[in-house]
Image (cartoon, rainbow, N blue to C red; front, side):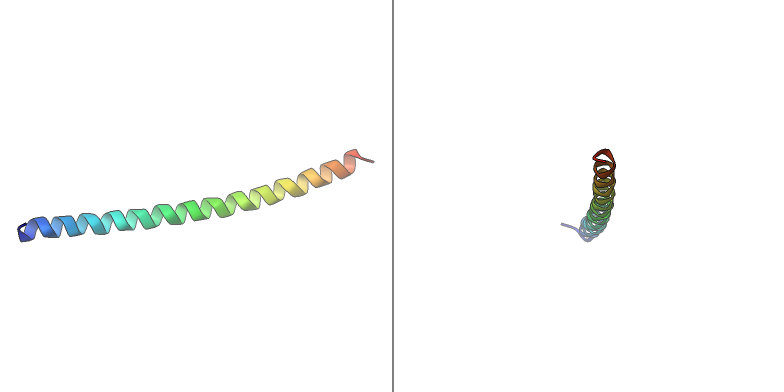
Length: 54
């Protein structure tokens, strides 16, 4: 492989690794947000159940 092609392949791999890290970080952030929302929902449902049982 000539030097130009090697550089292009290396640059593309670096780009793909950067994109992969960004996607993994986004997934992690979304999971954190989902966990927070699920906890809020749990609290709301508990309060709703408590009020309905009175």
